[in-house]
Length: 375
Image 1 (tube, rainbow, N blue to C red):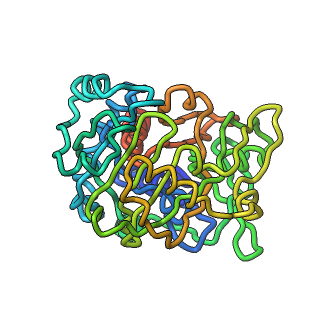
Image 2 (cartoon, rainbow, N blue to C red):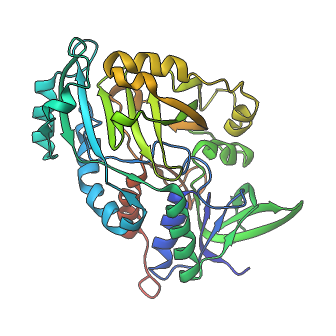
């Protein structure tokens, strides 16, 4: 393969979307993915929520970026979206980091649509534990349809996708640029490009450490997202109790079910890695973890706030690694990690905390990448 403009390591949503973005600007790119399909890990195993700002009253910047990116994401991927459900945010009376009045003021500030929930909906909540309930505007994405869309888009653009291919190490190439060693079916080859984008999410540091480079400071969590059937009286509705150690119920269109996430019980194990800390392959940790569901704990807590949730039925669970920047734990912010020249000139590490963060990264690439003939 001739020298490329860019190699994207990781065929999740970020790797695919950014590769397509550069290809549309005339760049020769390739996507390297260790699985046999695209968008199989964190791009699939998540809450499938497209945020509209409501979730981040403690991080104004994150909320404002959601408000900017929400309509953009919805417009581009409308055929992958589900918005035929009612969404409500409830503010807990005790333990919440915001009051109902503060939440309303916050939504006014970021210009997020908000109204008090109808009385029939408010009656679903325990008045002793919930201060107020608000109707909001959020959507969910179908991860399977999104996978199909991204595969179709890359194919139409002529972007080579190397499936079942592991990125082994990256190094400086003689004469400039980078060399990426990849392995497939026990055979290794070397790809060469002006730039390599490490979009491997939980495995960002594995590629860095295997290449003899300093790891980034990251936090990993082994997480469980139960897939559930809601009782008939709650059909067509989704809830978030906030803001603190509470929970959310969201549609998961790819399976025709709902997810139940709980701030206290969704993480099963966590650790940090970075300079001076032990390096572990997060997917190997997940593969060896004792995956015993905490759904009973989640639903018992949830039914205190929404009593009808007691009849929720557990169908399955999604297990995945969640990776965030440690500083995000302070205010629940979800900034994009965009570290250029990450140990080597031309090596960029990318970590997006939310799916719509991709537009922030696209805008950054547009500002820094020249199209052919303009250099």
